[in-house]
Image (cartoon, rainbow, N blue to C red):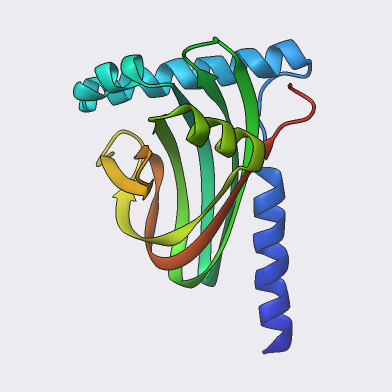
Amino acid sequence: MKNGVKAIATFALLALLSGCGPKTGNTIEEKRAAIKDMEVETLNRLYEEAPETRKKIKDSIGYGVFSNGNINLIIASAGGGYGVVVNNKTGERTYMKMGQAGVGLGLGVKDYRVVMIFKNKDTLANFVEKGWDFGAHADAAATTGDQGAEASGEGNFNSNVDVYSMTEAGLALQATVTGTKYWKDKKLN
């Protein structure tokens, strides 16, 4: 049993580390461009599925857009991703990475996008500088390709941030307690 747990932990760690950056581009400029493309695509989809978010983002102090891959294997889950936080008042773009680890029952792979809308400058600054989010996450999603894709409001992990997630593709059924860590991407900033 110990070897099985070690194998799951190793698999989860590899999945986490492999998902922390854009998959296209070799130069800093190419990686930033890939993140910009993901940001535009994600926001366009969010505006189509939840039109009221366009005004929320426009009127906010700033927003973040992240692409995340998550793998659930029996009792462990891990994920990683990347994104950008944009300060609407200054125009500053902060490129970030994210990592996720959790425990709970689940099996599957899920690729999803997260949009965060920050309601005040202190919350935005705190997120960019400290980047922590920890929470319980329970969901059920079953999608393949364009079939069954969903957008859902995740609610608030903080009353000063609205969070929306959109499943891209994958198949997941999970009930996990997940810790997510966001941090600045030193290479892209």
